[in-house]
Length: 197
Ligand SMILES: Nc1ncnc2c1ncn2[C@@H]1O[C@H](COP(=O)(O)OP(=O)(O)OP(=O)(O)O)[C@@H](O)[C@H]1O
Ligand SMILES: [Mg+2]
Image (cartoon, rainbow, N blue to C red):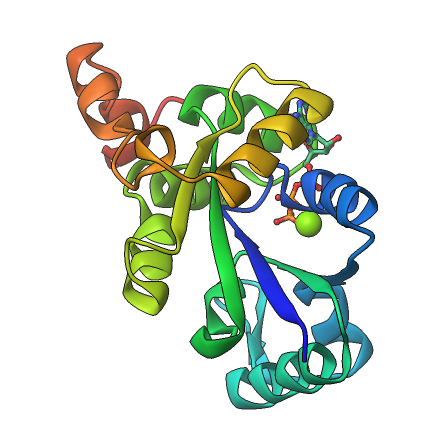
């Protein structure tokens, strides 16, 4: 029976890039849930309005459980809905954060539509993934890691420290994009009816 390290975060924050490095570092198996869902067709249907797949969460959770159970070491489970990994399998859950303005720029440069960019940046500002991770695993297993301005290699070092040592630097609640953007009067950019991007 192995153990899972969950890597969760808003789309585009760098989960897959970090997870590949973590898998190499720990000689762990790496599961990218978005790829697994598509390959194994673990879907219930398509959400036309949001232009996304509706994931069959029960089957995904069972598939993760099967892989971790038959594995002897660590398994890196990553995806923006990775909090469906059953709790008893989880050694630590990393929530990767990225400054909303950096995320906005990154998603636009990847060719995402204005609407999808706004939806995802708003979700990052509102701590959506952090809250989901804390609800699923409790504060003790969750480590919040701010990826802003860090190279993938720097991030790997920080993530390993977060997984192995934990501590106050990584306790949920370090990041507060909402307060920062409010102070800089930038919230309208993401939450007004006619945002300027
Ligand atoms: N630390 C980093 N610094 C700068 N750019 C990065 C960093 N990590 C990832 N990127 C870049 O950001 C983009 C998104 O990265 P990645 O695919 O790892 O994110 P993701 O969280 O897995 O996204 P998704 O949820 O869409 O799968 C890629 O173009 C990647 O090269
Ligand atoms: Mg990814």
